[in-house]
Image (cartoon, rainbow over all chains, first blue to last red; front, side, top):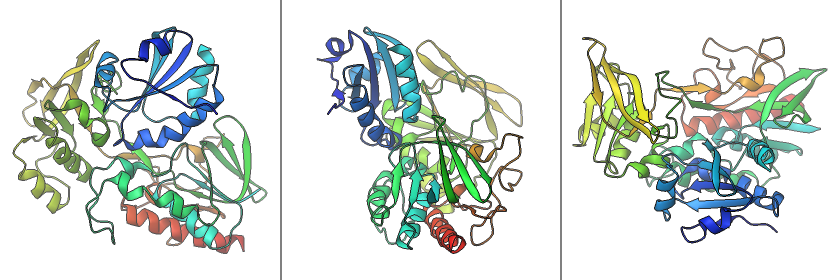
Length: 105
Length: 309
């Protein structure tokens, strides 16, 4: 069973430096973040071995939120080989995330 | 084929699902793109839901609804419905991936999304200073000054919420008086770090590559434009109903809507089309309260059961 990767300052670069990564910047108090949480879980299973499906708790990892200029959550950042290539702000459907991932893989 | 399809998983859709399944319908699916709960999960404070005597957040209020509402067999499918049509007494639902499902009856409870203020810079800096969710994003403006645009209940409630996090909140409102509930206005007036900018509108949202940096504000009486250096603005200028899925290929709508795009219903939540019901904020004259949306959902489900029998 694939599970999303919890990113911190310590493992961010190593985890995202190769391949395609989806990084969901979220926080526990955010309704739309909770709304997409089960979608992220499903993506982690579906894309196991194909893309890194990750989450950043912005409450605990404020440096990462600042680094990526996150001012609204959820913000979903897409990276390819460590470089940010796209981002989406706000809750979206699983199909929209899949479309973006598939275009990058 | 589904007995009943429920489009939307807020208080209206969840309650409709509870009543429909507890009322005996077997194949009932609620379509909601993620975890159910709806727009109320973005509210910072609920103090008017009967039976809930503590003041809670919207997220806390909705916490247990999905589990309870699915107890009698309601299925939840994480998907979006892009189009609803009806022919030969059967509804056809088109999903976002292009696949289709059929249902004998439909309850549309898609609710609404925040309306845009339609000012320059709003789209450019959305998510980079422009926000429509204070509980989500207030944290990113800790000890900073922010602006709130709007004068209704949501605008004032969320301004009060932000005043606890931010150093100062500038409330920009186009009129001299507020439409919000007296209790809410009183609360705002007793908050020292809320500053009112009345009879004014936002002319432009300014920024650079890092995001929003400020605003130009126009006084609607004198036409004077002043600038305000704030990194964030929270826009609460009303909501637009989500009726896109009712649009047909020829540009008409599946059922009758009013001029605001709201679905016209009777007291039993029946629309102009047999078998199609509406509940919650999408319907005409919706009070836009959780308790009312839930009530609508129950009414719509009971009407749907009667229709199917």
